[in-house]
Amino acid sequence: MFIGHFAVGLSAKKFDNSISLGTAFIAVQFLDLLWPVLVLLGIEHVEVDPGNTAFTPLHFVHYPYSHSFLFTCFWSILFATFYFLRTRKLNSSIIIALLVLSHWVLDLITHTTDLPITPWSDLKMGLGLWNSIIFTIIVEVSLFLLGTYLYVKSTTPSNRKGKILFWSLIIFLLFTYVSNIVGPLPPSGKDVALVAISMWLLVGWGYWIDSNRVSKPA
Image (cartoon, rainbow, N blue to C red; front, side):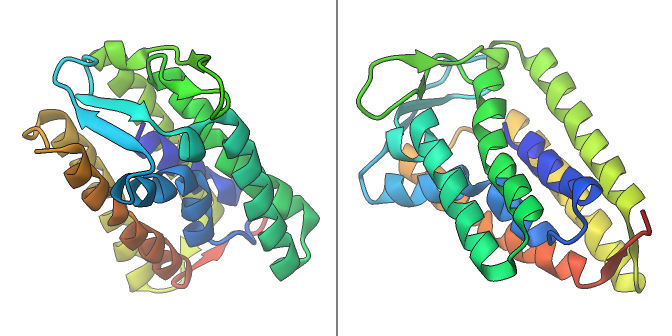
């Protein structure tokens, strides 16, 4: 899942307007921000395998430290702990932990049986939504539209830049999503990881948006 994760990040404002959009993007995409680094280091492994699923050609061969359920829980607690130490906001920190955990839940829905429970077990899970292109698009785009709606209902631009930055991000994410569906296959798993690292730019974009928008009164 791609824009579905960002949908959850966008919706976070509805539940806690003190969490910056950039921070929410780090949380919901934390596993996928960590994963390409581990791939490039040779610790985890992905292959381009056309036909692996109907929706994506990526075969996630080995990613126990970024995407196992056990380590996802660990990253959730670790991220929330750092956030609490910085802000002293317990409720916000709990939401941050849930945002990190949401990534694994959404991946569980879309992936085939490649999500490990622990790094030391052969047990893997996945409900396989990616085996249907149409249903994947329906579910993910619906989530994204909902997340966009909740963010718009929860914030308002403080200047013209706040409006332009936000809607340009929405258009860019949708364009990227379509490009991933209809575009050419990536040459290799390492190339996929290199592109995935660029998602940090979206985190910066999120902080930039939030610096030009304000929360609406509850």
